[in-house]
Image (tube, rainbow, N blue to C red; front, side, top):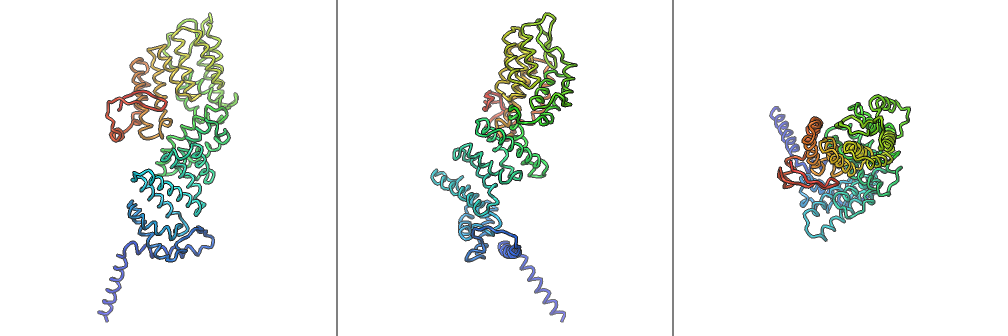
Length: 500
């Protein structure tokens, strides 16, 4: 009897061992029908209207081929996956009716085939097939229409820019946000941000529409920055680009409200509360944003200006001041430039930047004193940089200031900041295209130290801060560049620098 029990026990163990060693393919084939049967009992579940496993003539064969081709996909063995995928797609394009797996895998396979193909006609055929599969997802899985619109827009924007106009790309991203709202996919945000600004600037999008989608983008980013892991890393890339690009709308009167400017810029005044230009720049921003004269922050700024910057017009005698927080002063005899300067500052503090620029131009025409010219030109550069978002003109007036006063480091400090902040304008916000702008910034900050010892501390601080944002050695090597060679930075910068 004991021998029989031992024998039966041994048989059971052998059986269990053999079951546990069953190939994964068989195990998965057994599991899926069980899962399907359980889920199919849910009366509220809505499956795709397109042909599914359960609609095919041989459901078990279709599911077996599904598992086989999926194993190849996971190993990125797309050539081996293709014939199996074609068979199962013909039998059940909608798979189990719950997910668009067969369509999305087909897109991966055809993308692989297109990438390795050299014949243009065949490449075009594969590309047509990819977009047919996108349309198939929308037809069979309407709930994924927002995702598909975003993917199409993404592919047109990055991979096949000549296949669609900018407006068509914009409308695809817009459709994605309209359908999915703040739950739209993260890959939509950066290209849509760029197109939103360009469409507005070309008068193809009205201000209300631009404001609507800017708010959605900002909400998505705020939500994404609260995630963790790989998702957070993706949102960090987006956060390095989209918010900075959206600052371009600051030049549009009424686009952002008072609290936006308070939250965004008042802290910059607090970092350097004794700099008169800094006080006026912050004051002008808040007034431009529609803050009332009774707003607490406006009152604090006005109090600071009245106590520290009471003399605001150019003197009739040359000043020996080297800049910083100082302000051109009024002499008892007055000056022919006093009127335009006074009007310019008044307009500047009220947020009327165009009038301020016009007044300062008049003041420049009325003085030949290099020191006065440099101060006025530098202030105009700051307005173009901080308020009007015109980097080209900001650099032009900073260069003029440097020519008027050759031993002044501040113009080079500002030009360096212009370059360093241009990463999102000249690239995606990260990577080589965005990081190379730091090389040009370093040139300017080093020059500031060379011409003006008083600028050394500020220049060194910026150099230390931005050194971490230079292109990596790996990027330089991959691009065939060598340290020390000359390199011309494109985009609006258009200057030759040195590879570091």
